[in-house]
Amino acid sequence: MAGKNAIELQGVSKRYGAHANVLDDVSLSVTNSEFLAIVGPSGSGKTTLLRLINRLAEPTGGTIRVGDTNVAETDPILLRRRIGYVFQGVGLFPHMTVAENIAITPRLIGWDDEKRAARTGELLALVRLDPEKYRERFPAELSGGERQRVGVARALAAEPKIVLMDEPFGALDALTRDALQKDYRGLHERLSLTTVMITHDLTEAALLADRIAVIHRGKIVEQGTPRELMTAPKDAYVRELVKTPKEQAERLAALMRGKP
Amino acid sequence: MNDPRFSEALARLPDYLGSHVLVSVTALVLGLAVSLPLAVVATRHRHLRNLILGFASIVQTIPGLALLALFYPLLLALSALTEKIFGAGFSALGFLPSVLALALYSMLPILRNTVTGILGINPAIKEATLGVGMTERQALTMVELPLALPVIMAGIRTAAVWVIGTATLATPVGQTSLGNYIFTGLQTQNWVFVVFGCVVSIAQLGDHEGAERVQGVGSVQGDGGLMPVDLVSDGVVGLSGHRWSLRRVAHLSPAVELRCASFPERG
Image (cartoon, rainbow over all chains, first blue to last red; front, side):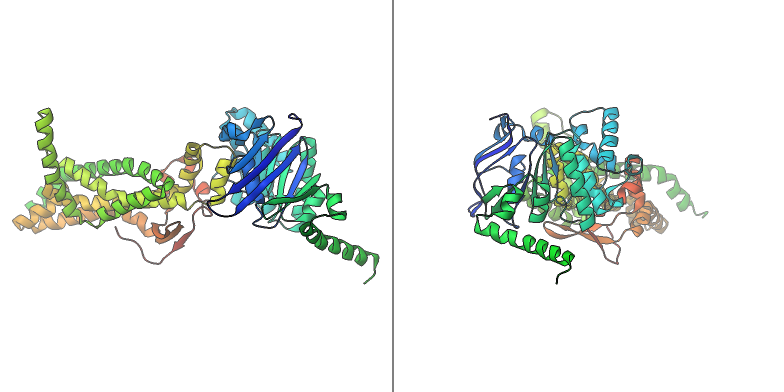
């Protein structure tokens, strides 16, 4: 089993000070090449869960494994360098060009200039930005969608097998968002990545992910394929969550059939 | 202009100006060498931050002349002590007390601006430094210091203005400076000397004043509330090397939120 799961959480809990548990006895596994979406409202602990995986935060209890290693026993710096991370606020370095931003992790692990330049060009093409046009630009000269494409390219730069994404497409307009979602899903398959994406948007999760885990008040309340969750939700909160997108889809379908 | 007092004043200029610049630059370099690492430590530990900034603020409230004078008895005592232990003392007058007092005097603006500059960096960017796998040191040198640089440079410039101005007061503790014109002139009622000293001192500050006119007083939202910080003029940023082209700096605005006020700051 050890080789099959890319990420495995067992009985993980997280508490800040004397407050109630942010995460309470969470067990979750992500198999190789799987696209898992973690859906939950704000304050549900979903970002904390993601940060635990690359040790941006430390669990209060439980164990987390990435590949064959227990993350508590790995150097957090080296761990982060082999996991791609796409941030909610993008987090590009404003004083570095697009090329410098993308090549940051390769630079940290000591790739030479030539290899970095080649990789940057390759990645820009991969996220559908013209390398010649964008290489020397600064983040402030990009649109929101372009910035997030660069953010994805930066996460992929050091050829990670695992990518963590924290509400990556949240702040984008609908069209840009859709284009980026489709492009990322394509990359996920082409590079056979293992992706864990955090989102509060069930529709986004259902359209992108292979499997969805719903988190509510620090607990995983239900997990399953998008189809299972959309058609036969068991948990009360999940039923509530599923209702709105389903109704909207039905209303839209009715609209297109021409009925009021 | 044919006044002999004027030509005498002119003849002393290389000595006075040279000494003045030497003591100012030495004090500023020493102040920087101490303040920058202290400021970095202060950004990492909240309690030390209050302690360090508090100490620098107290030093700043001591009048320049008093601070300079204070170092004379201090060093005298220290010299007596080393004489007893090592058999050799040092001069408690002149260069040493001046450099130490002026260095201390330069610390507050450098400390304050470095701390504010680093703490003012967008938390998302700080998080990203860790997320891409930087060590603390790499985050500091590759991201935090470069992003805080404009604010740090403004602090260094304020410190320079304060030090160069206060260095005229180093004359009474035995350090030759442009203050020699003023103090000698006052004692001998040589008004040409007094005026000459004032004019040269002001002219020397001129370089900095010119730069200062471009800046206003801003404030940066740091975690300790609003702190006053000089806005940055492009001239000084340009000094810091080719990697800091204006184009690069032009993109720094999201890192620190600067708010303009309409009056210029005087050191």
